Length: 347
Image 1 (cartoon, rainbow, N blue to C red):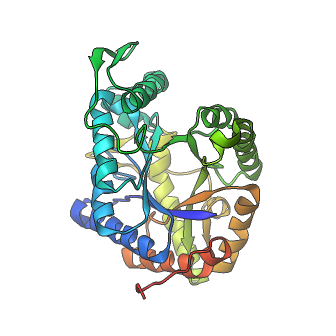
Image 2: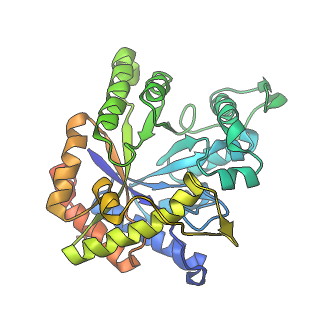
């Protein structure tokens, strides 16, 4: 089982500055590359102060220039916000500039506040996503593509340059339901999912759907992978665990506002709203713990057949604390699941 660092921007204080915010994320990527993480993943979000990365392909190129081998996953790129005739070329160029280390994770969008203000409300984002994905794959796989659909109508055109890799970088679908995972896998896509609040049975059902579809595909499905996204932090003490659990509660008071709540945002800052779930209840669903407990909590994922766990360490800790937690994870947790050996100082 491999591990990815989700380079997740959390920006509760505007005075910190976007330059410092992204420098911190780049430093995490460089450390992850040195420590043997399989990948880093980049969200795409706009107009808000959590998970904010309005230019993931640009950042992917920056990361590739500063690292040597780590994969770079868009996790996820929100296709309904882009014109696929332009975006296909941007993806192809980013794949070239990252030396083919790019994996294109795609989704329909998750925050109504963001999607509505950018012209694609959640009510129509699924249909627009489905058509956008079809257009994107056609443009990267074929020449002289024309289209007559609900959202795209255009005469024959060829996106230039053509992909170095046939069909462009591999595509990963963000999907939650086991049925959706089954059908997306059968279409030849990698899968990214999450068990929500640590729901073990849902995770087993998600993996089973993936494995069934992959098995039915035979050799065509052998290279496909399933990734699981989780919030995590490798703590060095019980007091740090308690502090980080409280920080996570603050993070989710904003996240819930735009994910399932009313979407109250002022000047780009999401209002923290009271949560029904207590901090102790939240702690049970996250991977905020010491190294030995982390190994125990990750064990069922490896046993179930998860290929990659995408870990979000960034939800309120100081940057230095976050780097230390990433290093602890690489040195004390990863060796239980991967053949990689962590070299903290590049020796």
